[in-house]
Picture 1: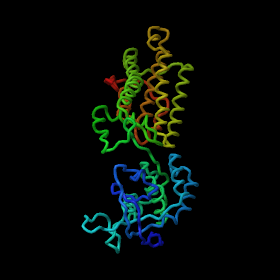
Picture 2: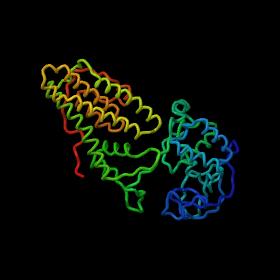
Picture 3: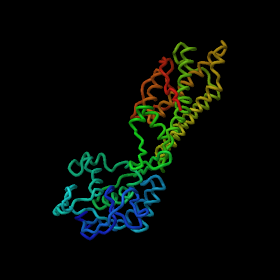
Length: 403
């Protein structure tokens, strides 16, 4: 950047937030406070710093974002960044003065030890050095450009404007995508240490299990916006969906195969429209969920998969295996129903593996099948597993909780 003339020295004046180590204009403050740390009162600073010529790259940034619509996702964050560019980008300070009496911290500016490099100019380059730049060319070329940076909404400016401009200045390729997620609120309130409304994730996982916590967060929090955590809602979703809809589904299938077929999943007989509909639904679930994940609609993909959980339960209700089990002339039909229900549940375990990995492998284990291969999990999600595997009844997948 310096060799290209993009680094120069000038006087900076503005509002400084020590918590985020960021500078703001008066217009960017919220009621005189840092927008990201409302409990912090910023201080006015004027000092000589080194600057990066961000404004020089406005047109190239605008062109890149317009030519690559998926460079910034979701769409609301892309629109936010485009708005920043159209309002006019200002060059930003990339160093801070070493203050007398203060503990020296930071990487000294080469040739000027009275200045240290600003954290957001320094830290972003770790994306490059972590994959071998500039000395290990083979490793760097293997991993860069990154497929995606996944970031919180509060650092959108740094990753979607500062970082791409720095890479353009250095003549390096940009990451293929920046995915920006929202924040988690608690009972409708912003989580903060000062408010004392902290969620202890370790306590949550110890109490309810990692799968249940992961499921709730991914199912109910939109990637594109903020999402709320409520313990009451968490327990309700756990009981209604994980315990009742998924857990009972597995329990019913394993119990019926043990009771009616001695524990061996039977080969299917002739199929009816019910089985063909469920098989089509399985294929559509895989296709639609995969497409949603490509769009970073993580909760949306889970909603699609969960529709297939309910579809499988409906199939069992409509097929009534407990009724036809009492009819000797319907034993081929019973084989088809038991195989179909077990196969649909196997596919559900595979589809759900990224969300509830331990439970997914538990489902497969109770069905007598191998664990999910995380490197090719979707390719395993095709209809038609071999029959005759033996079920291994186990404890309840998700025991109900007291509300």
